[in-house]
Length: 119
Length: 114
Image (cartoon, rainbow over all chains, first blue to last red; front, top):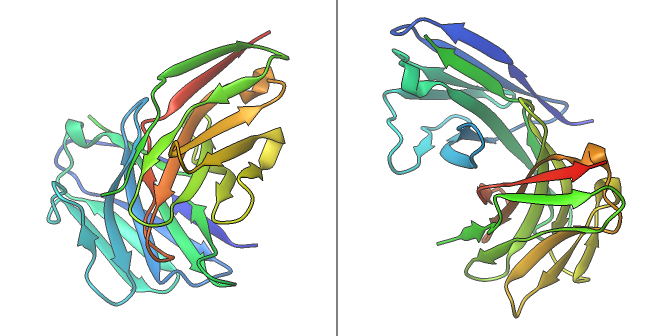
């Protein structure tokens, strides 16, 4: 069945380095990918929406030069945290919808998340 | 603008007792409402959703939720709690067309004691 595969599940990096997080849609084509960020014991905050073949749409307050999103194919979207700092440490989750069926029915699939720790 | 409120940071219940996790929403137009559960350092697991139809929605693991339009609520319920139900629960909403992002509540930690 449809799955969103997210890697890595956990990454520890030094301050100033860049980290790439990948989300792949398995058995379906993800024209859209949502990227969320979650601080400990807090809600998921939508960071950006990526669409295959076009520029990502960032939510207010999210630095697009800091969080680079690429959605070059229908099965792969990547989030790169550039020049990471300790305050970027967080849990990042991707999500892709499958739209189809009657009316507004859809299914939404989440990756398993990436725990980023910046030292 | 769409928003979701989960008024309780934590809910404590004894195993075998009924549980309720509260959620209210604000959205223009018809709401599409969801409940997800998250275990520590894990992704989200889908529990149930309301799109249209019966106000009482049954989902995974014995959970159900009741959509109340007049109270703009979508409380999550389970008749008999299990210790294994202890986790972080998120209510989410989206309005508008299919394929738009979900807006999540802040989450409620459910603790079931044996």
